[in-house]
Image (cartoon, rainbow over all chains, first blue to last red):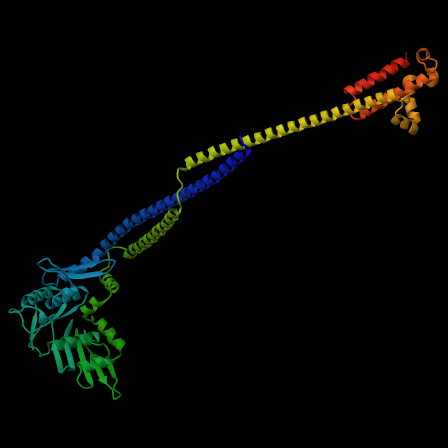
Length: 182
Length: 356
């Protein structure tokens, strides 16, 4: 075979090998990137799993906290029930805040700020007593007779001094109440 | 328990109102129901719910003129607060317990000891922040366990979750950067194994090609070497032939000279004899003996028309000539060529003749 042909063949093979080695390097780099990406994906998954595990723990802690706090809410509501003329107090103490509302006799749940004027007067009296007030003052102008009667009845039995002002007294003064005509 | 409410100049009401544990104040608007309850709030709390708490505000809102007094009788003890505007315009607050002026601290302490009434402003409680509400509620109704410890654990768990989420985010970002890097790379055709196989094959081919080239070069060198050797041999053969030709011509010339000229000694020999007669004479003498010895030989005495000594001299000179030719041929590298052999054969004849 001609020497020049052989030399050309060698040169061509050397060039082809260089190209192939570059391709090989590229493959190896890609493999490295794939490995690194997989490692990162696995890390992210591990972190995510750990975060989920912590969320489960956090959820349990929230439940534990809610259980501990339930005593506070329950005690407060029990105290309010002593004065609230109808329905049920609805107090929920969470980590984020306090919900205070009223579950009306018809079952609807309403937040404090949504209460009507008459409801608010009755609710305030109950809440004030639950907050350890020993003197409860009610301006009953906005209370209808039914709600007023209910409040008077409840307050009459509650361990609290009560002063109720009204333009329209109930037909019959509840037991234990002293009516003062002005 | 509050048993009496007292006021002087409170929104136009001055007087006392006895109350019991459960009191229902009934009256038309403007009869003073709210005055009594507000006077009680002011006497107990020092302010009226929903109104300002500064002395000036209190006096200007609820008082008439420059003086206002409110009081609450608690279990038989009268506690009074008085608001008075001085000539300078400022309003001061004074305290009395059972009619005696006292300090604010004494007033508060005495009221506390008397079983201070707690009149709460629910609106104020509602307006508190959630945290304050919670603190207030927990003070009144403590939780069932160590809430602080649980709260600390909650905070720790939240921090862990945040940290882990941050790690997830940063790790995903790193993965995204790698994905972007990958996207910029042009992926070569074939797998790594295939490329490795191609490289191995091409390296094998390269090795083979290099070996072929090396062998080819060796073969070329061998051929070139042989060509040179051949050329050298041919050149030497040419030289040998030339030397033979030269020797032959020299022989012929010598023979011709010997035939033509009675003097067989050529110019070279003569020159040699002239320049170094002793050396040539010694060589000839070694072959033929001395002139004196030659003169005694019968051969020379019987065969030549010349005198014996003259014949011997002629033959000796002929031998010297041939010896000179042999020497020339030997120096020319033609010692074993045909011309040299002929010359040496001729020389041996004279030697044989000389030695009988």
